[in-house]
Length: 256
Image (cartoon, rainbow, N blue to C red):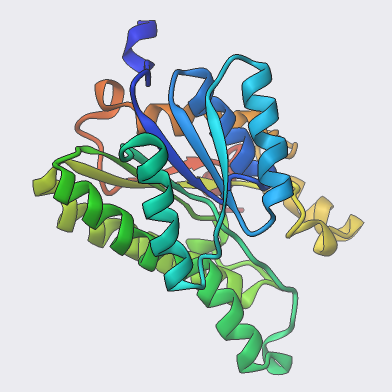
């Protein structure tokens, strides 16, 4: 069964691979044999992830790019192609959040969050999926959504809306790319404390989250690796596309 999840010979591009959750998912891909391009605005953080992967025997390289900059993404595609000849897996894990109340929300902040969380994924897919199709590469695109995409959460209005858009983009592109052998799916993580959400995790909010999470705990970053590797593997998930996979401790199944 180990061969079912073998990614040897494949290259993955991990956008936001220098973040807490993105780096864990990238590490999982590397541990199953994929070469991984770790991409982020902060090159130093990306290089730290590369060192961690290399220390475990994996192959990776750090790249600097900004998902809100179209030219930056185009250059990234050229750089990754020069490094590895192309790619088979694209992990879209950029993320930006804010607790600004709805009536206090300025459109500059709205645009900033939407640009990173939604527009960035659209542009990345335009550039990277198009090149995959031109090269005749089949593969997998994995978008990172959120539990707030299906059940809007208080205090994260713009973030929730942006992630709902990610779900729609995922399912649309799954239809668009299926004839080319490119699968598009999304992972819906539950609550994994990371840089972007710690600032709104008050004791009261934590208690509320736990009361709505049957497993009664936060997720650990490594618990996203299994779903990521499964969706990346053609052998394991060759007939899976357009799906939204929950890794949320049961949050999505809770009602009252």
